[in-house]
Image (tube, rainbow, N blue to C red; front, side, top):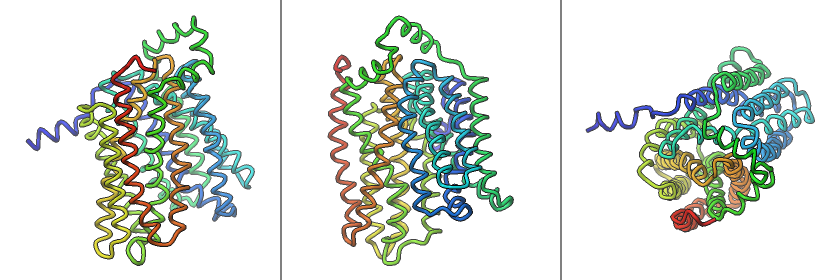
Length: 422
């Protein structure tokens, strides 16, 4: 029985070869991103001499251009094609990374981040739409799981390799140059191997005779009249707000509030590494398991898991004994919540989107991440600025809010059972 279980969970999914090639490209580009994501603040604070506040503002500026890039990228992916949009996004991101290598003051630093953010914003709608084009509806959970797995592996490898390069070369700009090279390699892989799907080619031909579908504003206006998509946006903002807590609020809570003295930086790093490793190991098995469920059922399971994970995190903070064990369990539960959310959410949007508007729909999905990562750190920061027990009760409130997400998902499930409703 155990052997049969392992064969089912470890077996690689049978996907279009282009999905695997796209995943390889994403892994390489994310290795480069790992070079800069962690080490850019260290370089510009300790080597260039910018203040931590200015570095935070500069890094945050990439989100502004990223929002613009997602809107433009969604329309370009539908009108111009996935392939050309992906190549353009990679080349712009490469230019941004190269600019970081030569930035020597705050204005140049902001400009480099604006360019890089635009490239990343253009990338996501086209990349997600390409996965949809190349997979059947019943394959999409696993197809998105494979590409997310490539992202996670690449990012983790980038952080490790980047640390090694810093120790051996003492050159931070080298990391940014290698990041630019990784984006160029990704563009080359897409150029040499990627082909628009037959469905996409037929959709393009239909759009040529339909001025409403091919107009930029027409596509967005049609998307925002889809009642199912609007309901999904509400619940997806909740999901991304939960995700933001893991990256922003949770480390600071563990540092300042866990137990009586807080966890050490090394312990927090180890806990987050455990979270990432478990997410990588669980990504494909969980996606395969969720194939038995509807999209809204999978998302309901995910959001309930988030709630359980938040309860463990709060317990780890208030407990004076066994708080490390509670933190380990809590982050493990949140890993499962993460990997059950990402494929199901993208697959649901793909199911909703007409073939000619997949880029626009997936762009809207990506914008939810921008909103969630704006609200999440704000809410968490406000809570952690308060004395106990307010900071501890924050995790309980997060868990309680899961009830709202469940209600919205149940309503969305009823809407999805009536496919003619818009």
